[in-house]
Length: 257
Length: 301
Ligand SMILES: Nc1ncnc2c1ncn2[C@@H]1O[C@H](COP(=O)(O)OP(=O)(O)O)[C@@H](O)[C@H]1O
Ligand SMILES: [Mg+2]
Image (cartoon, rainbow over all chains, first blue to last red; front, side, top):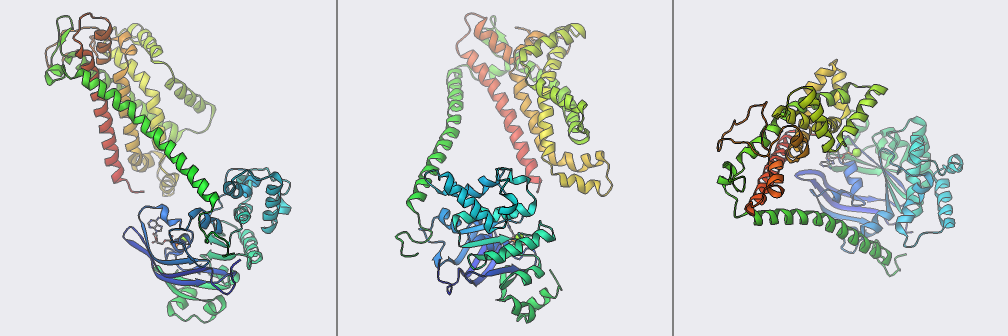
């Protein structure tokens, strides 16, 4: 583990263009280690784009240009010696719609392990990894007798938890979540939030959310973005009680969004 | 942690091994894709080289001479154009309309499942069977005799199921949400089809139809059984040499005849005939691609 005092993710003057359209403008941030940081802002302000920068998924589109610096765990991820495979292993991502693979629950959880090991892991290693990961996301009680059921037949909430569990055997340091609750009902949302609390400390969590109440409930720090710019980044309570920037104040009062 | 010899996110030996395998896989896939181009280039190159002495505009426009051992291929070329055009004139409207019904109106019930099954199976029937069917149905039963009509109808039956299948695919690629948007403002199905579904799938539908041109132009058996003859005397360069109730010549059949049935044909002539047939097919396919690109560029979603 890295030193808790140093930030997990640092960006300096980050700009990103989709073709000619600039989606991020001079974003500089320090995301603290072991906390839950939420990203809020109106639709289209670049939250997803920023999140996808942190494990360099945006580059899959040929027309994306990025300038500026991103340091993850004190390493500039644009350094030539960075392996995308290793980066993505340490920086996991959870998507808006749960996307379990069309395999069994068991195989979903061990998928990453299998991909990342040279020789086939032993049954015992795999079994242990599955139990540990499912316990961590509070799914073990529900699913321990149904490990060989197809993951796509689970309830959405369970699917989303499984998608989180799928990251854990790789021992990631950072988990990125892009509106992980927007496809879930109230109970599902509560369960995922509870899960985030239990993972806090062990992992650095960055969560994009559309829902201001959720950001307020579930995060330690909050970043407000507008039109590709970072407007304000403070402790969540402070941001909501006494926003510094008038634009933030207007947004959290619901004047636009 | 950082004391380990590998820098953070650096390439471990394991990663390097996986990347090597990745490169190998990429190379194999790429090589297979390239290997597909090679035979095409070889076939076309070989044909063109062997055909070169006979190829000229004169060859295309002239009629066969001296018992088909010399001269050109005009009657066969125009015959093929007749057959392909007429057969698609019949099969394209029927096929497209049937596909619209199957994709837009039909519900899941046994009747429609039977239709689907029939379409799939018809597409797999060998062309020689179509030939016999055409002979029985059009030449004898319908009493069209050995004629262009019989041959074109036989080709139409042969291309119909494939047109239905490709049209259904094109229709299915139009997002469901477009249809729902229409239904939700009270449009009928026909209004939805006309204003949204067809305009957005027309490029796929036309491509599917045009691709059948090459199939119809290349088949020998179905037309040989129903309305194509070895030889038919026509004027050089005549655009309308045939009546529909007559027999005609066709390129595929002509190629067969001069390669296997007629002694003493100049060597380059069969190759030149093949090149003309191939050029016709490639030109039509290129037109299909161009049309598709044009229609796609206007489609924005
Ligand atoms: N793949 C893409 N290609 C082009 N533009 C994109 C792409 N993804 C997002 N954008 C644009 O970038 C802006 C930011 O999008 P996004 O990061 O998805 O916003 P958010 O997640 O905050 O709603 C939007 O204006 C969007 O239209
Ligand atoms: Mg988003």
